[in-house]
Length: 116
Length: 387
Image (tube, rainbow over all chains, first blue to last red; front, side):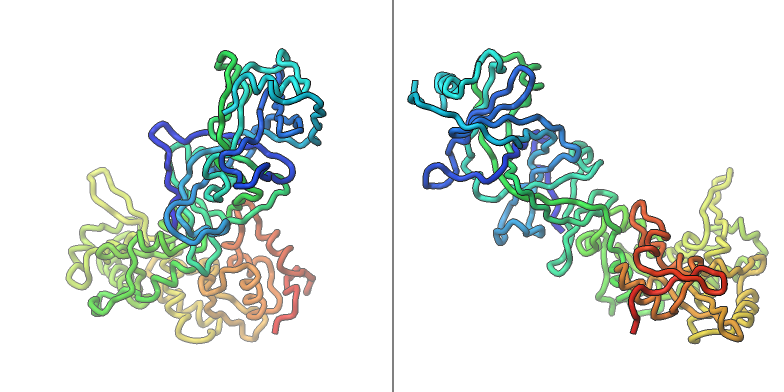
């Protein structure tokens, strides 16, 4: 049996947010994703999330999840692999909200340099 | 790290009006461990989120050859991977518009690191706890006080059972009570049936010789009179199993004996000695065998014995639901190989335990059986040929 230990401190579990995007995420430069920028996230005054990724603007909506998620982090030794439920897991956070970006991205047409 | 100026410049390029936006912006980047696949998502069924927030834990149970289940304190769930065509990014410290409005912060940037991403998550579905294994483990070495205990190697503590059985703790403890298991020297044991009947017989004989009412059997006297024959814990255990404990105003402990359970056990004792019995002969012997003042009735034998009203003479035979397969389809196959056509009344005790949370016996029959009319009575048979 693998207990899902709580890795958060006494204050309770952290609340994270889920961002749901269409398609796949690929690194812009070689060397993997770690450390690289995804984009800027803004909200309109009406609370509509706006994500600027590369040359695209994505409009989304804030969704309260009917079924929240728990984020599990694998801990300790064991064969790597996404479908290894017998490994030890810790619940590190809860997710009750997601930012869903379903609309087709609007391309940003630029003919001005990006740098200020 | 991106600066306010860079963010403003991007907004300008994108032709977005900062006046229409909240002053705070997030710069999202991938954290150092983001691509490592160390994080995964578990979709929570109602109630589980509250349990986690209350500080209770969830446990994944299952041996390598079993499908993993997730257990809360009192429920069991099947786990399944669900794929999504979208990319799910999980981000600590990312604020929602509500939180930002409540905060009234100045124009600044929140640098949020994406902890991980995935295109699948674990989905949960409430399921029946897998408890057949519990009886199987305890039956490896049933307890009898006459048996040499030093030869026992197959013994299980509560902790052992929790790690081996795919069920929640409460479901396991409840089932231990249902099957009449008891804790002896820290280990859960099930009694050898003959030994259990021997204990019961001591008690019923004493009730008879003392002329006690069946509803007022004193614990203290039982222990005094029978303590020389059997361990006191066993006397008390049999009283707890076959009676309802209560305390009178004077603080004395009594038991109200359970007629149905006692009659049922005696029937099992009689029926296990042959393949089947002449029904009327059995009913006569059975009534004579139960304690004075108790009435034996066929409805006490649901899930224990089956009556065949088509044979001449009518017969009865032992058929214990706990000996049948746990899997739905296998259970129905087994029942239909014992008898081709069943009435709903006859089959219900043998499929009742298969019902999921809000499922009815009728729904199970619709799914796994085919109905027809026979002599004006609705009967069920197999959907597929049984060899």
